[in-house]
Image 1 (cartoon, rainbow, N blue to C red):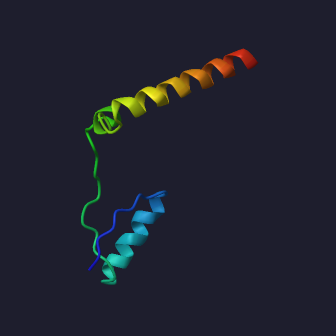
Image 2: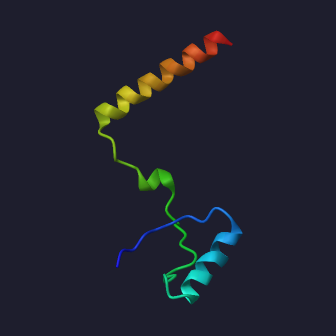
Image 3: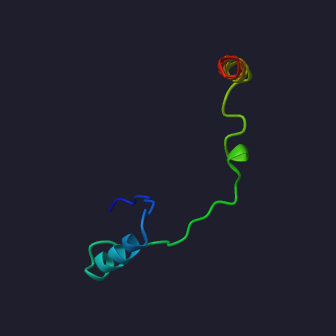
Length: 70
């Protein structure tokens, strides 16, 4: 069996999943999975310092261009 992670987009979706579970077509393993990890902590250190510096310079340049066009 494969396990997949899905995100529900409407409240009706959970009802539908529970109906499919009653038909033994799938099994709902967990209902609410929340992450207490902030995104900044989750992705900290994922870029090398060189890449981060280049990216930061591009962001600054883009902001400066945007500001000059306003």
